[in-house]
Length: 397
Image (cartoon, rainbow, N blue to C red):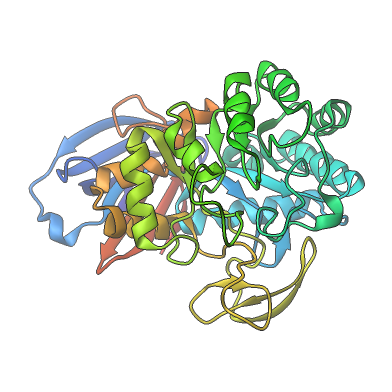
């Protein structure tokens, strides 16, 4: 529920808006006043909280590969395409996200980063929603299992000169690099990347224990969608899952959409990492928002969206080809699977990922930026009701 103030505003960013709901962290029913893109007042109200939505920080998703049939991995990607995907994030309560490129040819990645940088430099709607880019590959394992749906022909060892050229095309906006430290020279490469200000994340790896430790010692600080992009059968111990779970210097990003990780695995992972050592991501592909059916994906080839939202290699149900469900699903699922409070679950999808990449994300306090969402949570289903980006209501159900 929202009620625009009666006083005239000079622009959409300067208008005053009031929203009511109950806080995600305390449950208190409040009226939040937004002025000039900032939370200017929060007052308690007596209206029954049962009739109100939850008010929470806007979601911050570190891994978005596309949406609505459009992948970022596309030789024909345009600024309009980037804008269209960015605006579609509003429906899912996402106020900040990282467009993500997956392993492909240098030519495709260079083109896509260049276009994404053009969009970030010139389009105000993109600027409000995008804080940088995620480069997932191509310096990852070529083995079946660890490489997931990434094309085997594009897996290659880390190359500092190539990375620098791609970072230049991206305008210096690559914020996360996901890679496997299994290659010779990986530790030295990670040190260079980390020293350049980029968050290095371990993912799609078949690295051994020594290589994992060397990567973290060199500056790696995250594990990309831990538990996915792995062999279907692995050594009991040691293995790269235990190594990453045990190292407190690594924050684990998790896809908790009901398809990628069983409930028991999520529960164990969270017991290992705790809320301070984990973040939620959606990892949605361009198939997100698409009806069930067969599709030709620009990046990985044929994919199938099943009736339950599972995205798979066509013709079976087990081999996943990415994700198609928004990060809000992860909030509801991780509460169910790991017994988390609403406060902790929301912060795993907002403040904690924001802190990892150093972007601004308010904690629903006076003076904080008005990047917010409201939602209902009923019988384990989270439904976004509205999204407020920089003080403007950009989506309302």
